[in-house]
Amino acid sequence: MKVQIDSERCHGHGRCYDLAPALFGEDDEGYGAVVGGGAVPAGQEPGARLAASNCPERAIGLVDGGVR
Image 1 (cartoon, helix red, strand yellow):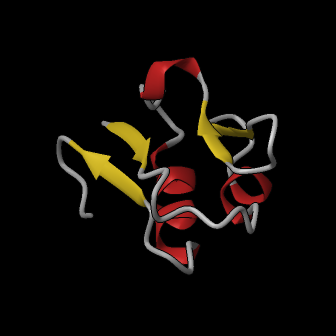
Image 2 (tube, one colour):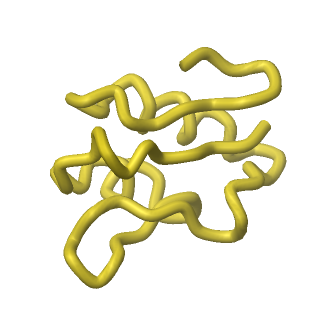
């Protein structure tokens, strides 16, 4: 599974990096950013799903077995 952030939809609420700091960080302007190239390590899938489901703008996409 991979995660991605649609930068045009992200408003910088920070829920992604609060809920899944191993997968997300913030850029220089405080918007969400994917870390590690977006690959979700084994065992981190629940965090990726949690972050995606809690994004108010639905800016987080899960690819390869996930739901956008």
